[in-house]
Length: 324
Ligand code: SER
Image (cartoon, rainbow, N blue to C red):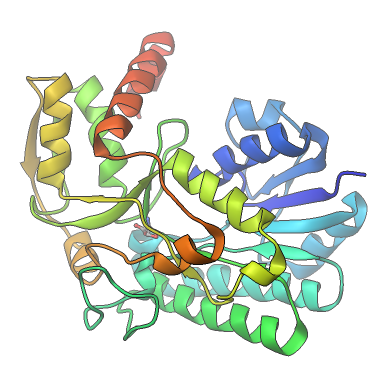
């Protein structure tokens, strides 16, 4: 029998696309989507959905038992920009949800966990270029502190209790189906929307701010890959560095201009500039390449083609979405 999967945070940017991918791979009814709020039509109509508050351990437990779940993907989290505004709430959500899932695995109710970490675990004292897997990690954001603490808990639960938890340090994720919310890398999604709807975009980061990024298809592929790799290949139980592309706002704008020559960009950096300045510019993911043969597919050129093509179709078919 196909094992059942629980997705916590399924209505979010990554959750939506990951759920749909896992449903295609393992059967719609075998992937139970949950979130604090309902998600997109595509998510809601493609399989089972339940409302779940990820900070309530007993509620998670009840769903595990009700659906005879084996694997859990915990994607619920407050991202970097929002977390700076609500530090305590961010810490409570990001930490408690992870500890609940780790404890439920320790109690024997979950066999495998996926939990995402982030480039935000690095800080101003980490090397900026080709940031290594093992280096100085002194995050200066609430989000980064919660992700670094989470990584330490993952490794601890693996070594002490044998919990099979697997994790990736995602870079900024770019997608056209669902919007990100509250992150510092969100500009790289907004810019495509505004290029199509307004022909101009005001960026909240400076033109030369380089950050590591990745197209959603690659992020989902990496997640599926690390979760289906044999246990013994996973040598890092904190979280793997993961990399694909990197660019600055100026470079992505130039790429968009190749397709939309009249597109213009302005810069009005806000508090998110300081967050971006504390993060790496490029990431060394040689461990992921060596241990489970990670390889990305999308570069800035073909990602831009995909983003513009699909967003044009989306705005064309549903004009009300132009308010996004
Ligand atoms: N995309 C995230 C953020 O900007 C980083 O993991 O917060």
